[in-house]
Amino acid sequence: QVQLVESGGGLVQPGGSLRLSCAASGSIFRINAMGWYRQAPGKQRELVAAITSGGTTNYADSVKGRFTISRAMNTVYLQMNSLKPEDTAVYSCNARAGGMDYWGKGTLVTVSS
Image 1: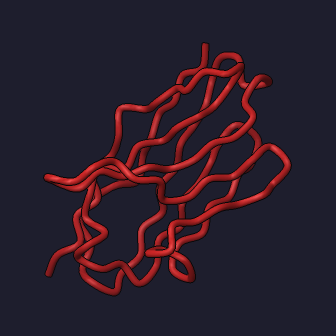
Image 2: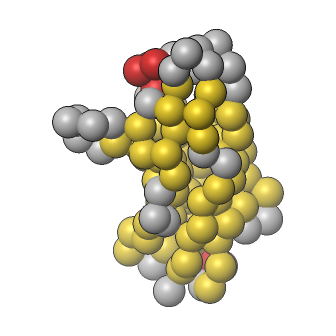
C-alpha cells in the first residue's frame, strides 16, 4: 500500500507560479513511477507530467517548457510557471507500485485574475 498526500494548490494570477508537492508513505520502495494528473471541469483526466524511479520524465505537450517535475526521496514536486487560465484543474498525484495505481485526494489549482 502507498499513501499520497498533495499540497500546494491555490489561486494564482495568469503568468504566476505554483509548486505542488506529493509526499508518499507506506511501501515506497515498490514505487516505479510517480506523476501528476489533472482534471478540469467537464473534461477527462489527463497526464500532466511523470517521472520514473530512474529519473526519466514525460510531459504533456501543453505544459512543456512551463512545468517541471522532480523527485526527492519520497516526495514528487511539480513546479508550474507561466500559468494560464486553462491550467485550472484539480491536480492529483499518482504512484505506480507493484502493478497498481495509487492516488492522492487532489489539490485545486485556479488560475484567474
